[in-house]
Image 1 (cartoon, rainbow, N blue to C red):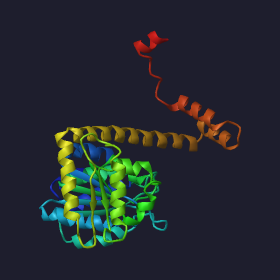
Image 2 (image 1 turned 90 degrees about the vertical axis):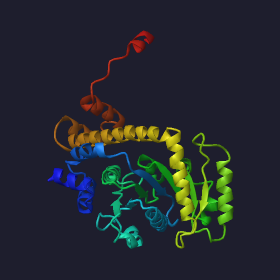
Image 3 (image 1 turned 45 degrees about the horizontal axis):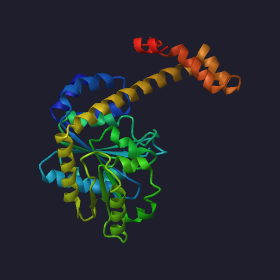
Image 4 (image 1 turned 30 degrees about the vertical axis):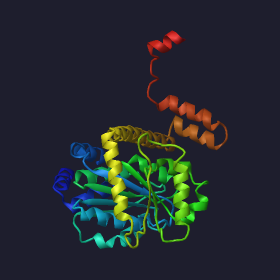
Length: 327
């Protein structure tokens, strides 16, 4: 069944793609086999992360950007990460409703993904979904984050280019905005630029950016847009393309992807160990008794944690010759 779905995915079958994204979302046991099977068919797509505070018009902007990309004859995958609905546990459908003009276009795939309350608002399955869209042959993958918690930073885990969307009203708050969201930006967009304060916001961003370059050789641009009318969106796509060319020519694209693969490995490892240990603590035996002792206040949490690590962790690595000499 899985192999059949994979073959259909590689042949461009939208229904197979949808089924496999669902499989990744529910963290099915077949996910490792799936991702390993499609690995040789990935690496061709370019992923753009669009993030920013709530109310900045990200969904409308992504919709308009997808329209511009389609006019270039390129296929698009859109993943909108929504806060988990407290009633259904699924993704809120607002983003998909806003993007409904693309539904009849078979070269556009749209999927809302629930954040599941994870730290940063990014669905645990997002990276797998991006890889599926890559294997399915999408030229550009647009990832819109929910703009909550640390989600603005986490988008760097999947995106080649990070676009941070702000609005004129955010001008007074720019000094107090999380450092992470500002530092992650490869491109700044001031959306709803017809509103009062747009010019001041642009100047504030340019002033901040004049203090130094996060990435040597790349001057972070500030682009104004009006997503509702489409004004400025072609220019937005132009600077995304310029950033892509910069990353390729400076060999930073591959370096970014190598670092993302390393971080993905550590993230999966952390998740696997967490699940394993949590299962042991909730079962029966020595570790479960230790957890109960912590709850009763008989053992300090830090002491118990050290005991658990000693009990279930990997063997301690032998010191290197250099370390032995230092001792």
